[in-house]
Length: 146
Picture 1: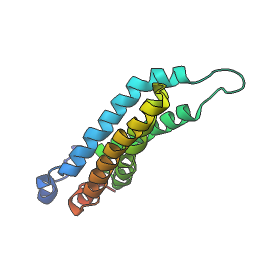
Picture 2: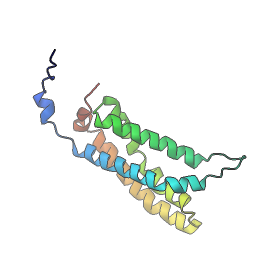
Picture 3: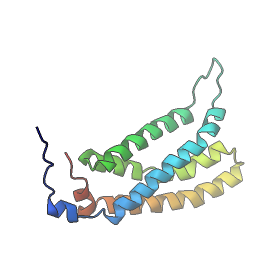
Picture 4: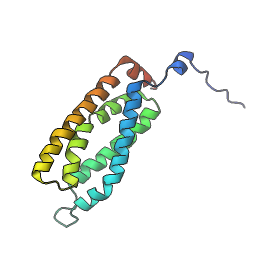
């Protein structure tokens, strides 16, 4: 009993990965690396006393890690749900870039305010570029698997 491979659709094979999707993958893998590098600080940030065995920061980081891992997995498979995950992950630059470093590095208030202004602006620009790119027809079409 031989298994014949499914014929390749020439239109789909000719479609390359859109630039916006490539940019999103760069952001998603950078976010994954950043999360991995900051996990020791997040764990150290948590007070493991009986009063507070968890922190909001720790919960956020674990949800973000699961969201990014699953999003990358379905995006690599070109699943339609991957497009929705990609847009959701594209909304993370502002809270990640602006909010996490001051909390994890215990920045004094004046330094944190400057950081919010600088990194928040960069995060908003990255978010706008990624979301606009992912909403283009070519990017939507790339996520073609049911």
